[in-house]
Length: 539
Image 1 (cartoon, rainbow, N blue to C red):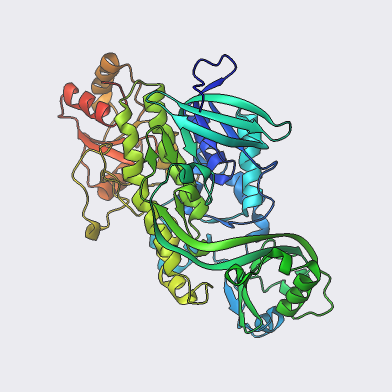
Image 2 (cartoon, helix red, strand yellow):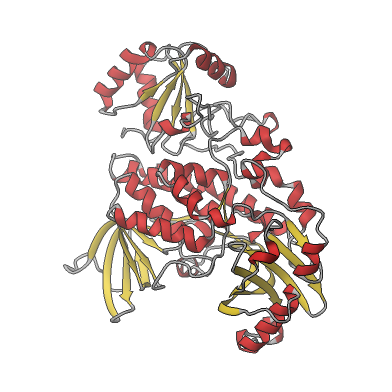
């Protein structure tokens, strides 16, 4: 590849994002939040036209809340708000008629279930039902409105990297013009068939392809049939038809994932529209139903995990790093959380003069989380490739999406927490800052303090830390926002929750994870050293 660094026509940008799906679009928004210029390229003309993922989990909603988008996404997906429950039977009509009761969403979604309420109380957000075609459109429009450079119908052709740059050629598919790009870093959010991952020869583990399906997205007016009996999915296991029907809006839009066999030579061409319509009428149990096929997309039910997520100046994220089945509902959500973890670290290195060794903690912190959810998603597949409902029920606490894991890396200071203690929301180093409501109306949370910045949460009066933070600012230039509780009862609750005493403080990273627990007895030099270790200031 020709060296592009001296090409006067080259686009020069701190971060090049490959892929405009939900992971890439989230990366764009988090980079904007951190003030990092970027270029995003996506080979397709538009955002997703198929619904794909239908659930945004609790942690992803916390991150979208930080961007001011949680209410927008929840409202955009309101047609699916009642889509809960799994049915099984020979036809949808029979399954609905034999159903004991409607599966209305409990208050607060799954978090409203009694056995999950202790978990749900750990966040100001709850699961949101919103299909990926809708959520991607929301993220795209927001990124554009906030000044992002997003180029759809553009494709990565080739790339290489040096010690200082990533050099790439992007092709405008509208006019076949090639655009040279020189970037400091590249984020590969280009999906399960990632060109970047393949080119890098990344080592993969996992079960591989478990089964193959045709995603048949169609239109049929079933509003009267399902009214008051709304559901999430319908499983059918019959000799002539095996698959799962997903509700998209509980009215006119549906997606049936039909098992098929490319290993036996089957392809999309073997399923003309007439065959698909007949199959869907059989599935639903209404032979005279009017059906319009919107699109058909083959896809493999697969588990593949990249053993490495960083290759020099290139980072894998989302499906490019950990392809998983949809049964844990974590594919898109894990991608959102990947790029949120990465964005603030890129800022620390690119804008704040931090040591680039901080970037290695992206791999350390995120690879194991993605691998866990990928393996879990594969374990929830039954032998025939459909979801095992009993295994799903058994894992429901893990499926909420609360960040019930502990980061251990060089960007965390403090003794790692033993897993058996499970103190995920008690302010321990490596865990997400505990959520506590700040007002009686339950609108403002401690998580709302973060806003993509390093912050200090003080146990006791702010005055305890006034002189300390002022001195730190003089020595480092860092303006560290400091928060505490004005109400005595709130302070008591916080100290009980976090086992802190007056004078203690939590140093919270921009991703909301506790980087260290501090005491006002620490010297300024010790605090500055911690700030340097965590990437808040340069050494």
